[in-house]
Structures are given as C-alpha cells and as structure tokens.
Length: 317
Image (cartoon, rainbow, N blue to C red):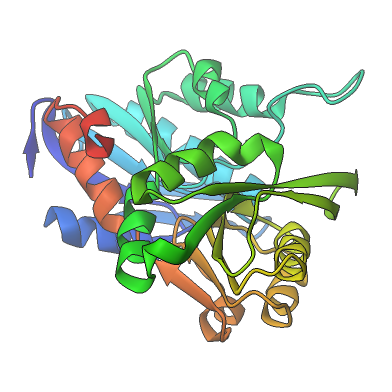
C-alpha cells in the first residue's frame, strides 16, 4: 500500500501479534519481516530483514504486561528502523503503558508517562498513534504529533446491535470518567448515571453512592482500563442494589492483572466487553462473561489515513 511518504511498512513487536496481523489484513499489506528475540541474558535483539529505506513505517506494539520488556522492544525496533533510513516512523500504541502515572500523586514521585514519552521520542519516533489514553493531557507529553483514537465507534456499533436502547443507561464508574461516559451516552441517546466511590488503597475501591435513577434499567459501565476488576464488580453490585435490571461493562483496555478474570467471572456482571488493544490471555478467551471486540479496522483505517496525509479526527465525526 503506497503512502505520500513512501511505501507503507508494518512492523510488529511481540506484545500483540494477532492484532498486528489483523491490521495487516485490513490494509492488505504484509507484515515486514523482522526478528525480535532475546539473548540468553534476556537482552533484546532486533533485526529488520527487509529494505525500509525511504519507507513510511508503522510499529505496532502495546506496552502491556510485561510492560518494561515490551517498551524496550519498541525503543529498539524504532532505533533499528531509524538506522535503516526509514523516512518516517510512527509508534502505534494500542495500549500506552504507564499512562496512569500522568501526574505527581505525592512528593518525590515521578511522572513516568512523561518519561516514557521522552524515551519514545528520543528513540526516533516521528509521531505516535494510540487509543483511549487514560488522560488526554498525555498527548502534550510528546514533542511529536500524537493522535489519540477512541474505541467508542466500535463500542457504539456493538451496543446498537445488542441492546434495546430505550432501556439503556450509561454509567461512569467514577467522577473522572464522566466526560467519556457522557460522550457515549450522547452517541446512543441514553441517560447518564455516575458512581461516587472512594479508593482506600491502590487496586481497591469502595462504592459510596449511585447518582441517577437506574431502577429497571440495563446499565452499561464505561471506562478506559480494567485492571484488578474491583471497581467494576463493586459498581455492578451497587447498581443492582439500586434496582438495575442488568449490568454490562464496556472497557477499552483489558489489563486484567492478578485474579481479575476470576473476580469478573464470579461477579454479577452480565458481561464484560473489552477490545484487543492488549492481547487476551487464555483465561480471558475461555471466560463465560468476557467478550473481545476487535479494533483492527479502526487502527488500520487510522494508519491508512496517516500515510495518505488525510484527516484522522474525521473518523469520529
């Protein structure tokens, strides 16, 4: 597939090969042959096995678990491409790790999201393409063009296909997610409710109150990340206690660390829907109440538009 900045090349790291292959299939462009392997001491070695001189290269790599390994892969792949004279390198980060460390929560603590942005830029990336950043201001951490895509169009299509919208209520699991939830509620013309919660310690949350009348409603919780699953499980219990008919959750990034899958499976959530921005584990694939939506076409279209110097924001109009 040709672009305005030379031939398009797709390079994949080891974080999410299935998604990279699906994006390649959408673009009808084969993945560039590359070796990304470990030495005996776990140092990362990269070799690009095709000519990329003058090419417009897109590196598909989520910085998901193990986050540090996948981040180093991204940096070394980028350096290899830069030294191979690629014309432009775009880091495609379906999931941007360290995004939750976007501010100083206390004295003598880092802003790790800014550090990671600096590393990606210094490695040689010319632009970044990512999905549902935990905080929009992270775009400003990069000194290169950064496009933050939204999974909402994919979720909206799925919701419209599966629900009677007349009885649906969109719910934000916390105050910080209200803008995101309001945007989806507007797209499907549904009312909005908010969970007021207090987090006592990292990884744990206590639901305090439900703001909005959810009695008899099918509630859809919307958020960008599900990690431990505690917030969703507690929110579902609170909504059902207030008379909700059923509770579903649509989450972009299924981090699902530790015992999160078991926690969600044993909960009162009717279904948790996540995207494949992070490659699903075997436990996720076999879970009865977890379903995965593909974002390959969304990312593929954004890549095609970036290569052709066309508008990416119009994807969400």
